[in-house]
Length: 300
Picture 1 (tube, rainbow, N blue to C red):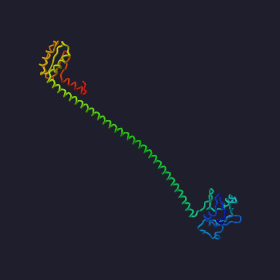
Picture 2 (cartoon, rainbow, N blue to C red):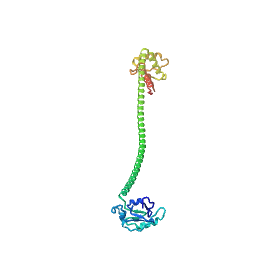
Picture 3 (cartoon, rainbow, N blue to C red):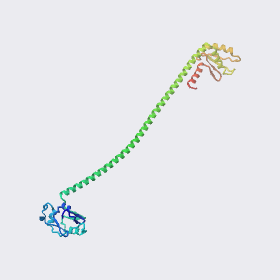
Picture 4 (cartoon, rainbow, N blue to C red):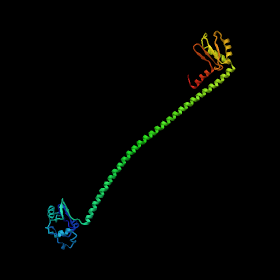
């Protein structure tokens, strides 16, 4: 059978063409008759590959096979050729599950091993790529979760820091206001003290220069009591004689005889009038104290 011959040998559905026969070392080991039958011929007549290197040629050279029908594209007798050729195969060429088991040449074995290795490498690379993709997806998911958690923690920390800062500012503001209040209070008190001091000085000077102020103040204090109520008047020793004389001259219809007491605890220009049920304090210091309390906001 030549390489251009369209005929093929069919064995249980597997077709062995000229190239396959050449690959198996069977090229040139048979001939076709007029009926299209293929038979192995004697190796000595073939003058081809050495017998020792091809087990298939050795088997076919020693095997006396019956002519086998050749299935061609136009014959359609594939099953008959399959059965006939399968029965004529030697033991080392077995047929299982529509495949012909043959001994491959080293070149074909190497090619097949390389193909298997390449397929395994591709599978391994695909598995690595899938694992890398899963790992990357897990990393991205973990990063996203961590980023979200980090943002939430950062926002919470920022809010806490802002709240702490606001608390510090509020405390500082409260301290400033308290200090301002104390300063204003002290200022108001100092102003009141200054005003009272000035008033005391002015009153003292006026009283020393005009005794009518003393008589007017004592008369105002005595007028707080009924006409017939006995009174006790405490005045400064320097004012005693002046006030007694003035009272005698200006009593009018007042028939009371008050008891006069010289008391140096009473400042000049003032008096302390005691009745049966109450005391009228006409002292200058008392009046100035009331003024001081009014100015300083200390209402008694």
